[in-house]
Length: 546
Image (cartoon, rainbow, N blue to C red; front, side, top):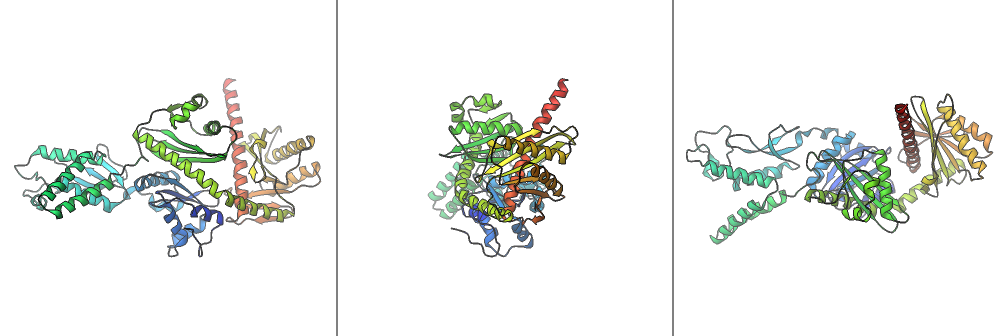
């Protein structure tokens, strides 16, 4: 079913994404034009839930404001709704999206508790932080379902409900839903056995309780009590549903990266769950074209990824890949698990599912992304009255006036040309942002002239009118014709406008031109920052040695 938007207008790139969402449970992350996460939600059916934001019209003002800001959506597939619920909570705590602020209070997280008393009770409790030595199970996302579970457990394993213990037997004792610790003939052995039965069930050991209910069904049928048999059958079905296991949270002391990987004839897909203290709190994903061996390309990506991210003590990766390429252990110097327990196997399979989903999505969105880029390049061509295909973007980075570096990225033929990127230290004796930029431009484009290489169709510099003027001055001394622009940021350091000769174009944040320029701006910023960190680290190590 394809979605048609009438009231809330969105671009066709986002629309293509929405129409190709999976009908599976999971979490979704709405992003604004600056690629910031503004809302995180969960869904039993990702396609239906996300579609409802744009298809329905009876939203409250807060939701309407959210919809106006949405420029992109990302999602994570889970095994079931319970996993989605817990993952949503972890992601909200990690990212603190502005439209989730009312959901940050954990009082909505409910637990089933076995009290620490001589005759323990089974009850529903709400905690922001679970107290020490408290026996709780959860959290559970659905209060009604949890209340029903507690009610049914009382039927199968009767416990006291009164607080304090009364002097006379209560109503529940009369209907055999309490063992009556208030009665002199109470057997503490039976009470302990019931506590053990509930404890085992809530820990996922459900064989005993299911056998107990099945025996009750058989007994009821033999005595022709079909009404009671039907009641126990409903109890059995409900308890089976509530025992769906979740793997989004594992052992509290487990911190590791879980990696999913797949490939087709042209692209590889990597998906990484980052787990801290038993909880998934971050994820990283990439789909990229490859040449030669896809697994070698995967190892290269992981090697580059861990140069800029904390290397975990342990990585969960499909053991067959490690057997094929044992050198990965040396390239990425950490422990790789070759044998998984049940929980580790399940969470690794979930990372694998997300990698496969991303690969499928990549091919579906390719033509839409191509069209969006075509529109952006067409707008640039109109502004400069020249065909724009080859673009270079320049950025400067430094640490409080020290270690000035320049980074240059190249975009050509609808793709980033990463092999053509370049970065270098600034040689100025007393550098600042202006003379550093002047040096970077002169060195870069004098080299192109010396090697008789083609100039880009457009040169973009990161900065305002000052950066534009100094760049224009240097380029005029090198070449007669060129196209130049500056990516001006506002006081929050967010892209705001494009400076052209004698003109400043304010950018519509939902336009394809803005998104394209923002993409280039982020790419050159990240490339330059990474090079700067490398230089900075080298300088620090040198100072320590000296």
